[in-house]
Length: 385
Image 1 (cartoon, rainbow, N blue to C red):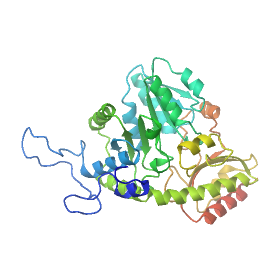
Image 2 (cartoon, rainbow, N blue to C red):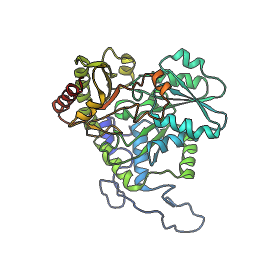
Image 3 (tube, helix red, strand yellow):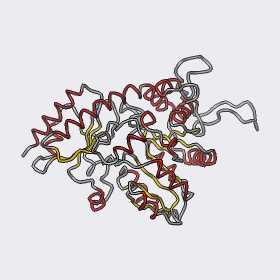
Image 4 (cartoon, one colour):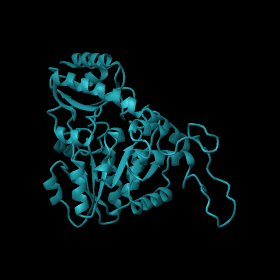
């Protein structure tokens, strides 16, 4: 991490720190669309804010450093970031995706990129032998989430990256749930890392943004060309907000995870809870792999109640925890993946991969843990039929 050995310091001082013109400790919001140039034919440092903006550049340098990459790119949303990465491919290419992946990723492949002859296959990326056998000549990339959304499935990122490299294809990791504070896929061999920075990186539910990080210049040049050509860039003010959010990522995630570990233990022991999905539990799928490649289990939990509990009543009975889309903010949020985040995935596929109508996803916030647990307990009690 350049001269900063520890990530807690790099979160605050990494990338482009401060302002070289005024010596302000915060990068200013350069709210401009264009820049005066000194003469025709000269190459200016800045020319037009779609192509480059100092506030956005500071953010892009920061996320590149935090992820252990060399080149960062900021987009107007996580889906804009994913769309830019998928734009690397061409007609006839096929992409392998994790069996439980964010519904928006599935939707853009299924409903948009399919129009251009780019196809996908849903694979169990935890089964490495089966994954490797599924790679044919038309496969050009493997796109994984680990832990995956919403079942928190853990994939061995180093192993998947090796498989991809051996076949000359790209390995792409959506690192939204873990962030570089807890997991760095590029250091495990991945080619591209994607973030919905709306979530933990922003951390306050006040900005929508996406980030991409790569190590290799050839790939970086291609993504930079796509970013500038398609124009889905992050604006200066949102870039400023995101830098501000990242500064507190470490202290926030420490509290998020502390609360999540207690919430997962509470739910695991509750008589109403049929199953808990949390990579930090010793009996969880992929626990040992996650412990090897990540700092801890993160702060996302999914769980199912027994059939004699009405989840609609559960959601309505919550007083502190909010029913809402998104995750990773300071406030605790729950959602119903089958009808919210993953509704775009057809019912039969959802059932096949385990996203049942009874699944509840919890983004554990940084409130007092006793208040969170008391709210979950009373809502579960109210939902008993």
